[in-house]
Length: 97
Image: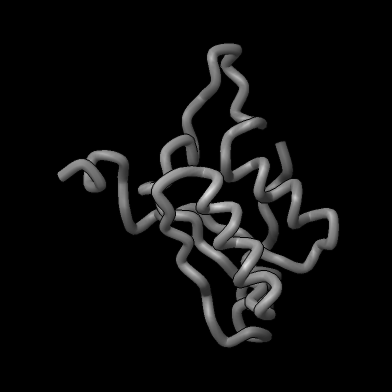
């Protein structure tokens, strides 16, 4: 699992693009496609919402390193330029309400 970045790094990424893209998809595949599109469009700060199934669920082996947010993070960290956040404004309980 990657270590969270400093607040300054995240704020700097938001300031550089001037926007945070909120990724809300019906499934992980759509979430990945949306994140790729905003990345290609120059947006370097994204939030993955809890509405995407599999965003944070723990796998059967107890590992969290292969959840949707971690796979997306690994893809983006290869280039090191996109900052990710998990949709803290919405909980799994809220999304089913």
